[in-house]
Length: 477
Image 1 (tube, one colour):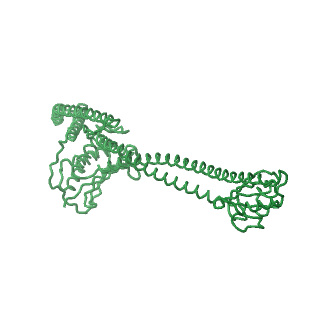
Image 2: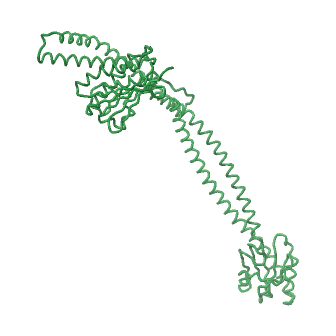
C-alpha cells in the first residue's frame, strides 16, 4: 500500500512540477520581455527628453545672440564668453564656449579653457553652420556625455564660435538602471505571487486526483466495489462517479463468476468422486486386460487431474470470498517437504525426469504452519516444474535456513519464463505463452497460501536456463 501511495504522489509531484515550470516559464518570458521593452522605451524617452532639453537651451542661446547683431565681432565673441560663464542652468547642464579652432575658451563650471574636446559635433557645427548632436565619450570630462553644439554666427555670415551644451549620460543611465531594478523587483514579486497561487491551485487540483489514483489502484489490486468519496461537481466528480460505477459492475461480475465457479466445482465433485472410485474398483479386478485396463488407467488418471482442478477452483473461490483459513500447528517443515519429494519423485520417474534433492545437515526448526496447505504448495510447484520444464529432464530442490526463514528452492531446466510474463505468472487464470495444460490458478492459490503464512513466493529465470522458484517462510521464535 505504501508503495502505491508513493507512486501516486510521485506522479502528482510530476504534474505539479510541470504545471509550475510551464506557468513560471511563461510569466518569466513575458515579464522579461516587458522589462526589456520598458527599459528600451524609457531609455529612448530619457535620451530624447535630454536632447530636447539641450536643444531648447541652444534655441534660447540663438535667440539671445540674434538680439546682439549690432555689436562688433569682437564684442559679439566676448558676449559668447560672458554667456557661457553666466549660464543660469549650470547645475543641470554644462555649457562650453568653443572657438573656431575647437578649443574651449570659457565654461559655466569653472576653468576648462585651452582644452580640445575633439568631438566631431564641434567641427560639424562650424562647417555646417547648424546645430549638431553628439553621444559618446568626452576627453575633457572623462565620461560618456550627450552634447548639443550650436554655432554662434555673426551677422549671418561668419561663425565666431560654438556654444556646446553637455550633460553626462551617467545621470540618465542611473535613472534607467533604477527603473530596471524596480521592474525586476516587481517581476520577482509577480513570480512569487504566481508560484504561491499556482501551487495552491495545483494542490486543489491534485488532491482529488491523488484520491482517485489511490482508489483506482486499490480497484486494480482486487478491491472491487470500493467507492471514491468526492465533494466535487466538476470533471473530477464525473470521473469519480464513472470509476465508482465501474467498480460496482466489476464487483458484481466477480461475485457472479465466483458463485458460478463454486457451484460448478461442487457439482463436478460428485460425478468425479464416483468416476475415481469406480475406476479404482475396476482396476483392482483381475478381469481387466489389454486395452481395457490401459483405457481404465487413463480414465482414472484424468479423473484425478480433474479432481485436482476442481479443488483448485474451490480454493480459489474461498480466496475470493475471504474464506481461506489455515489450521496452524507446530510442524517439522523439512519432514513435510521430504515426504512430498518422495511421493512425487516416483511420478516424475515415470516421465523420465530426475528429481535431485540437495540434502543438508543444517538444523531446521519446526515452524507454525498449516502442513496440509504447504504440502499443496510444494506439490503445485513441483507439478509446474514437471509440466513447464520437462524438456530439461531434471529438477533440483533444496531446503535451508536463511535470515531466520525457511527457504525452499525448486529449479527446473526447461525454457524458462519470458521476461515480460514474469510479473504476471502469479495472477489468476494467467497462462501466458505456455502450451502446458492447467487452469492458470494454481500459482495464484499457492501465492495466497504463502502470504497467509507471512511468507513470499518468487519466480525468476535461473542462470543457464530454466525457472527458479523460491519459497520463504518466517520462523517464529
